[in-house]
Every structure is written in C-alpha cells, then in structure tokens.
Amino acid sequence: MTTQVEYRRLGKTGLRVSNPMLGGMSFGSVEWSGPWMLEEEKAFEVLKAAWDKGINTIDTANIYSNGISERIIGNFIKKYQIPRSEFVIATNCYHVVAKTPGTSTVLQPQPQDELDYDYQAAGLSRAAIFNAVDASLERLRTSYIDILQVHGYDLKTKPEETMEALHDLVESGKVRYIGASSMRTWQFALLNEIAEKRGWTKFVSMQPEYSLLYREEEREMLAYCKYNGIGVIPWAPLAGGDLCRPLGAQTPRRKVRKGTPFDKKYTEADKIIISRVEEISKKHGKKMSQVALAWVSSKITSPIVGANSVTKLEESLIQGFELTEDEVKYLEEPYVPKPVRAHAQATLGAAATLRGAKFKWMHCLLSRWNVGVSNDQIRHSSSPKVNA
Image (cartoon, rainbow, N blue to C red):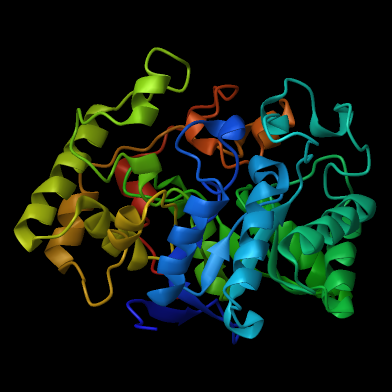
C-alpha cells in the first residue's frame, strides 16, 4: 500500500486519522438521493482506491441510504480482509432510519420522534442511542465503532441522559471515542461540561460545516475546540463541489437541482473566492479541490471529502502541498459573513427536520436568522488553526 496521505492525531487523543477522511454519504442507493449515488460494486472501487492510497478513516451515518452506506462499508472490510485495527470508522446517530432505502426521514415535515417508524429510534435518549449503535454494529459487521458522533443536539432529551448513555457505550467497548456534529457552541460545551462534572467520557471531536465559502464556525466553535484540544473534522470542505470547478460549470447534480429550492445562489463574495481558488490552482498546476483542501487542512484536523469516482478521490489528495501565507490571505479576504445554518433552527426551536443532517447544504430553508457581524469580527484577527 502506497501512502499518499498524512496522519494526524484527533485532538488530544492517541487516535490517528487520515487527512483527508473519506465521506460515506455517496455510498448507498440511488433511490435515496439520486443517480450520483454509488451502489456496492462501484462504491468498492472508491473504497479500495482510498485504502490503497492510505486513507484509513471513513465517516458515515446510519441515515445514509437508511443504513445501506454502513452495510457497504462492512461488506468492503470483509471482502478485502481489511485489518479492523487499521481502519477507523466514524458513524452518526440521531435520526430515524427508515425501512426502505428511498425514504429520507430527515426531510419529513414532522419532528423525528413523531415519525411513524420505530419510536425508540429517534433522538438521543438512552434507548435510541443504544438501539442505533447495535443496529450500526450489525450493518458494519464489527464489534466496535471507533468514533460515535451525535448527529445534532436533542432538545427533547436531558443532556445528562445522552452523555451517560454515550459514556456507558464507551465503557462497554462498543464505542471507543465520541464526537458531535453541527450544533451551537454552548450546546457542545454544555454536554462536555456535564460529562466532566460526572466523570463521564467527553467529546473528542466536532464535525461542523467549514469551507472557504462558509466560515461561520470561526465565531466560537473552532476557538472552543482549539482551547480544549478537540479535533475538528468538518463536512462540506469543498462546499458541496462549488470549490471544485469554475463558476458556471454544469454537473448532473446541478442540472437536477436547477430551479428547485436546492439550486444554489452564489453571493458576489462567493464568486470572487471561487475565481481565486481557480487562479491559484492554475498557478500551482493543481486541481481547485486541492487548493480548497489545502486551505481548510491548515485550519483543522482533517476534512471529510466525498468521492463518487476514483478520479475525484485522487483530486482530494494534497500531501506535501501547502499554500503560502499570502495565498491564504488572498483566499480569505473576500469572505462576507453569512446567516448561520445547519443548527440555527435547533436553537430557535423550529422543526428539527434538518438538524444535524448532511443535507445542511440546503442553506437551512427553515432558518431566517441573520447575523450582523463584521468581516473582521468573524476572523477573530485570524482564522484559528485547530489540531492541525
């Protein structure tokens, strides 16, 4: 196996993860999300290429294709006899896993715990977490999960119940580390404070949205994680592909979403940033994705990248490539603060439909919360570097 990646410790832990980490959302069923999904045979090609290049860490979630993503990963490990101790699996729990691959419970209009499915499968109650973990272990064909992440903040369950359940899973050996996905900084801090006071296991990682086109987590979350030695493994480091190609380039996904609520609208600042990424990529003879990932990798532990082909995977490898200080400033300078998304509605008490899900690129259609913070304030003088 030829290693083409770097390995970094996850926060203060001794766990080493690859940079980048491979995202598992594109592995599953075309019924769940669209024709760009990779079913098992094609997913194996990407997984094997990733493994051969040294990527030893994969991030998935129980809701991805309603468990099929986890099954594909488990089948891959068995088929290729991947040593389990050398392969790091991160998965998420919170949302309801439907019984059919084409049902997206995350997009239902009612709260997760009111869906007509297994009523003990939603949220972060003790029962829900234990049930979710047992189901994930069966699908992944493994006896333990390296990093179990809560896929959002549960407003309906006491945080003490959630943190004790997570601690007990670590004590049982079914889970080795725990992490969290997008939520308010105060929510993340509260959960960790409760765990610390009671001697329970604390979170070692945070998975926020973070890219050159969305830097709102620089306000508080990245600083909090840096101070506490918590690893940061962001999703959407390429902004859903927007940082991979020049403005105006068409893809099958963009064509499908054109004219729908999911059709992205670029701000003038976005357009400038994308153009500058393209400019620097030409200067170095690199792909735009490699420039964007070099920037984000200088700020955090490891980005989670999705790939629906071996080519796209190779364009996510950046070992040995770094941007100059002036190039970093050039890329960051146009950014204008945006409305907080992904977890805004959780705090405001709106429907929990999108909370913590990997459909966060939808710009949180339910959220209408605007933030009046200057460009200088968001940078906190400079973008924080977290456990890089």
